[in-house]
Amino acid sequence: MPRMTTNDFFIFRDLIDKKSGLHFDEGRKGLLEEALRVRIKETKAGGFQEYYRILSEVSTESEEFSRLLDILTIKETFFLRDKAQFEALRTIVLPEIIHKQKNRERNINIWSAACATGEEPYSIAMFLLDALPNPKKWNIRILATDISDEALTKARKGVYRKRSIRLLSDTDISRFFEKKGEEYVIVPQVKSLVEFSTLNLVRDAFPTSNGNGWDIIFCRNVIIYFQVETIRKVLTKINQSLSEEGFLFTGYAEILRYLSTTFQPVNFGGAFIYKKKKESGEGKGETALLGNNETKSPRKLQPAATRSIPSKLRPQALPISPTISKRETVLPKVSTSEGIPSEQEKKQKAGKCIELAEKLSNQGLHKEAIEECHLAIKHDPLLVDAYFLAGLLYNNKGDTSIAIKKFKKTLFLKPDYFLARLNLADLYLKEGIEQKKIIIEYTNILEGLLQNPKEDLGKFAGGYTAENLLKVCKERLTQMGAELPV
Ligand SMILES: C[S@@+](CC[C@H](N)C(=O)[O-])C[C@H]1O[C@@H](n2cnc3c(N)ncnc32)[C@H](O)[C@@H]1O
Image (cartoon, rainbow, N blue to C red; front, side, top):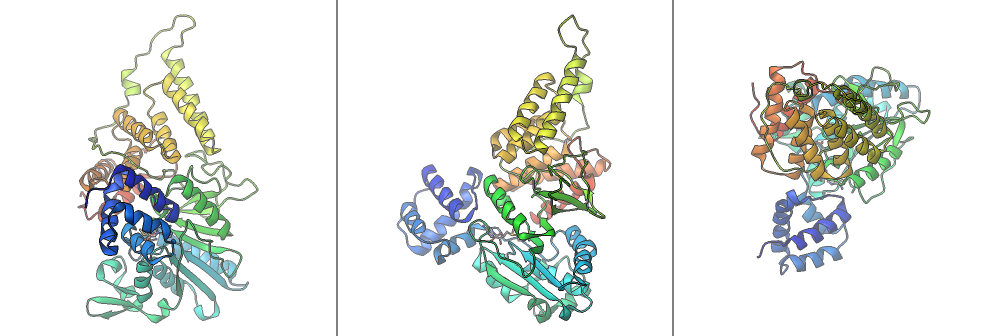
């Protein structure tokens, strides 16, 4: 069969995006072509054109579309994925919900919105069983949905290999699983708590809870594959489905800043979780940028940080070198003749522009914020923060090629601007480019941070610490099966 043409790629990409929300940038063209070839062979279609006709005529719920999606979706998951989040669930979130419901209807509603093969909702069920003194006296609903029927079939079986349960303690393994040969079967008490159902987050209506909205929604490691506009729509629906005091858990790379003004990020000891913003203005302008935390945080919570949703980029491994602030070392202070601003004045103007850019982006005025970043760069072409913020803003606007340039420029000026490197590496990951190059980026960050664990992550780090960053990079490298530097 001849190779897929660029035109074929675009028409399939648009069709799949429209039907499922899954978006394939050009960097993932190879992946899409491979999947299409498998289905063309299986359906005995005459080629890409004929298969396109078949696919455009079938519904999203059809067997053919779901077979294709089963190949295209990334279903990597495991029990207790992101331990810090589960720790927050166990020690803060569940006790808070239980405390509030104890003298009410005793309802607990949790939705795992892209549950893949079930490890996530079963992990939640185990924690809930431990948190409730007498589970039988509670109305528990744990709904677990996914677009992939293949994943749901596995989830319903509840049979796992050692790799999936690697983060569980031996005690929990023996309490919640029955070992059958090489396999671990989830016990009926946990299994019966979870209800599985097919649901496409992009096209389907959202499920309603038994109470006044979901107490907790887990929507992790899925929106990363959607276009910015699709993410915004999904987030709006999630916001409407959550109870007023509800909690939203997203994946590491899925920081909602710049994508939603209706969620308030909170930091539970290194885990980033979202709450709804209050109408009263509490937490208004979510994005309460970094370090500018005028908003009230809920009890025990601290404002979280800022990292953008990754999008696409070509790889480039830049060496980590000691911090060189070119602004400080290269720019000479020139004396002024009348009317011509001094270097000092230019820097001051640039500083004001970047402050304004920050405020504008907090208010969701991204276009204006970008203009201020450009103005800042005009006044001070070596102002790294201006390139970085512009990179985040372009990235979230879906203008990936410009975002790439901005992150690269940031790193050119300051090779140890770790958050810029993280955004860059995440973009590589999302685009599915050569793994070796992505691994170099995450390893560079890890090595840099291990050498200097107290590293200041920059003006736009907000609550994001070196420790958070270390964790993100370690998780990414582990997922890719790469070695961790010591
Ligand atoms: C990487 S897994 C995430 C599993 C789990 N939430 C976690 O974080 O470990 C991504 C899942 O999203 C599902 N998915 C992709 N597009 C979806 C959509 N439009 N609606 C619902 N689920 C979708 C895939 O089938 C896949 O199972």
